Amino acid sequence: MTDLSRRSALGLSAAALAVAPAAAQAVVDAPHPALDKPLTRIAFGSCAKQDKDQPIWEAIFAAKPDLFMFLGDNIYADTRDPKVMAAKYAMLAAKPHFKRLRDEIPVVAIWDDHDFGENDAGGDYPMKAESRRQFCDFWGEPETSPRRTREGVYAAYVFGPEGRRVQILLPDLRWNRTPLSEKTFKGGYKAWAVARGLQGKETPGPYDRIADQDATMIGEPQWTWLEAQLAQPADLRIFGSSLQVLADFAGWESWINYARDHQRLFEAIRRQRAERLFFVSGDTHYAEVSKLDLNVPYPMWDVTSSGLTEVWPVTPPNALRASAVLRERNFGLITIDWSPPAPKVTVEIRDEKGQVRISQAIDAGTLRVG
Image 1: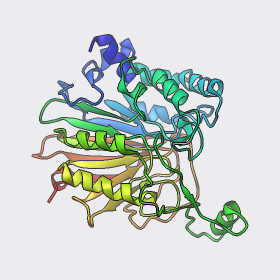
Image 2: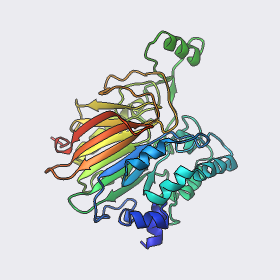
Image 3: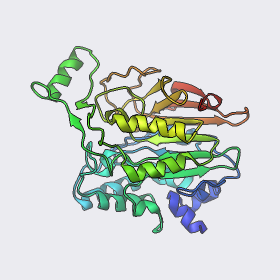
């Protein structure tokens, strides 16, 4: 790749290359030692309305991340009009904080429902090809990028030299997703949820588990890609999901709604011996940590950060919750200590002022198959 195409692949300006030239060499879907200096600080976040102020970026800049991961709902397009979508991307691009981000910090991104096109949208969303084009244009994907032509904008990156390689996997949970299964509520879901909230009870969402074994979150072509990626060598793997992976059943969109894909994901990790992997996720409009350590290849962690501007006061159930729930604007920060025999990882949820509100230590040496 030329320097220009590398910069384009991550949406980097010349100024960003001057700050982090090695990071700009990350290659989509190709494991290769891209950095002379390994990643040690990775920020992530989701759910940022383009028409709201976004002061949280000051705290993110102060954290000095080597990379920022957008995990979806990076704008709220919510439209079937290409002009409306383009105008909302333009609104985000014009924000001073966002301009600074793109000038100073390498960025990778995946979409969720609102920037895909509509709330809770899946494979039947009629404007998805246009949405893919606008997503790729906005995030600076080169014309030769596979994200522009395949069925979904999923991507994989490898940063760092051998011994300190960080693989980042960004699956597309929208393009091929089969329809959700909606519950039936007497008087409608909204009235039921309000009544639950007034009683101070946990409030699950309107969706049910899907009984159809053919139902899928990501589709067969993406499964083939993901299996191949999980087989690639890496010293640490970060699976960036736009939806929660581990939450046992919140009733909102999550991997568990698609029970076969949920189990297939863990089996793929086991079969490919994709060790040292943990999940980060978005979507929920609150932050929390989930842990699953039964019938999985090794202890699985999912750290959810949401949102950069959006906050939701309701608490859905989650039997795998391993932390407090933070209902304030927040972002995630991954810090990697490469000095031990296996990386020691700390994943923090920080608030708008940069204060640590949730912290989870993860010893990558314990994330071993068998």
